[in-house]
Image 1 (cartoon, rainbow, N blue to C red):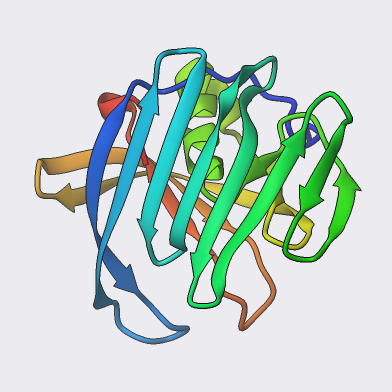
Image 2: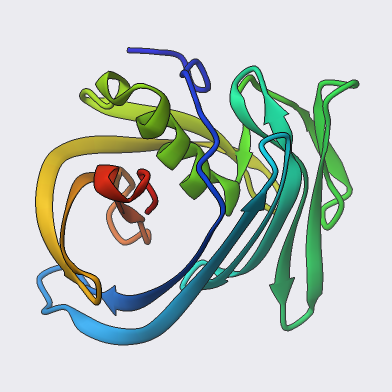
Length: 192
């Protein structure tokens, strides 16, 4: 297994996407849960990402680096105000402003929003990296964790643009904890 962050990555092209969100509880039927919007802007060197959906209202900005997307600042908008995480590349640390703490950084570290585009960039750069699992260190508003995605294979999915064949990645997590499923569409630039 590769260490988190040790992947070849190519930044996806700019995109503005709207999704229908479906929630499914264990053993339950899928149910519509609104829409989500993703705005990815990049010039190939720098990026801005806004995500509004089931993960919350997230903003990420940064640049490209040796390990793909290199966040510099992330913000999660909450009812109690913004939660800001800063990535100090020179100091090799992550600053969690809401908690007043810091942690050492890691090669390929992402924030909660940039994780989606990093996964897309992994597929875009070298699809053969999507074997059994993909592990990425993710900085939230207060701490770091390893997001481990099991690669479940290719599936056809119905979209407003027609049927799309995509790679299905399912985040592994403890029972009762929300997890993220991502479908990456090679024919659509590996966008989620």
